[in-house]
Length: 224
Image (cartoon, rainbow, N blue to C red; front, side, top):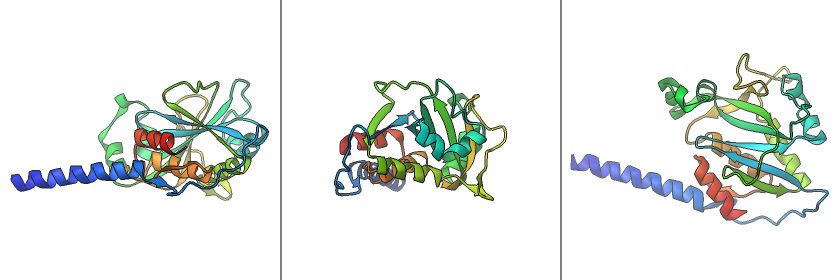
């Protein structure tokens, strides 16, 4: 019994050290030279957090409508008069599709999340998002960094015959859709690690490993 408790203590300690190291060790380790920002060339992006996962919101303008025109063809209302933001989130297929609310939690999506699952991208549009909300972090990036971020996001879609693949009848509401995505999902390298990788392409530093929203939020606040 004592040996089991000792091993459990070691596992908990290892997990704590891993989360702490993943948060407080920056990635990249050394801050890159800051890209020149000016009023005309900078772009505002948002990181949206909830207790489970994080999303990236980019401004919905002529540039992003052109970059993601294929989403308009798939049913995303890119030209809606009140739409100001285009929102992306990457995650596990079973958990994302079958758990829109905590009340919908079922054993199989949890099992798939803890082992290995195929991935999907969730895309939505939004009207005004108040930056004062505790689940919102805002960053200004250069035009080149913004282009790199858009390229990372676009490159995360799985394509068949040169076209993205919407998942039939998969949505939370009337403005969002799910799409097949590249890569495989695991809870240790999932929603939030994808967000962090995307942000790093835009010159934003994150923690070394951020599997949950709170550690990602903290590392973003520490290093940017």
